[in-house]
Image (tube, rainbow, N blue to C red; front, side):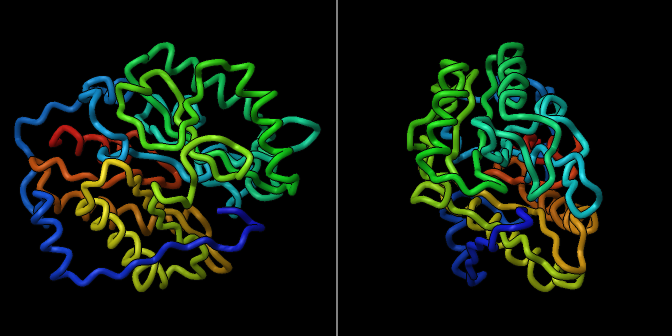
Length: 305
């Protein structure tokens, strides 16, 4: 969530009967038992155990919203783990907010500098991927708390970062197979000057209704939207359509931690009610205050766990 941006919301309403048909066609049940003999790899290497021909759009991928927001108090902080610790815990989608200032990218949440720069994020990703070459990292790159033109933002990205980390970032505008991008960062470009998969484009389907005013709207609005979008990801089957369902929110009467604490049991109950043996695909699920347990709950679905 940005403190300055207007909300960008992708809302869809699905009739349950029609959805059930779609899920049945995709071979996905609406509920069922967990696979008893599933073997789930460790958090640092779970992608290495997957078929390289799998599209990134047809995996369940735990992620973090506002990945670098560890500072600034309860209205600003959305995570407790560093980038390196998030990756070690199994997170494979990073939501990176970059303020263009003095020719570099400083990581911000709204006006609050998060005490790291984009180069620090890339160094942590590079080190992790060098140690775990079977993994890949999806990374949203978004301009935050600055207003340089897309062209200027893109120039900084290309000259300060892409050229200094050659080969690390994969920037084609399509959803790759896992085997194409092992050991690399897949850029999802939330800025017109940055190359990569277009955020909000034809290949992304995003639910991010983050401006939730009070805790009461979690039940009436936020969770119904999120769960419907998770249902849609399960029913899709499209290898070139990346579903992203944010569980994060805050508002005038709701802090990020309160929202996360309200959403976490709902997500856990939803996942627990799935037929794990069918390996349901939930797409990418960015969360606030991610833990090793919440990440594992999601990536384990890729293995029937």
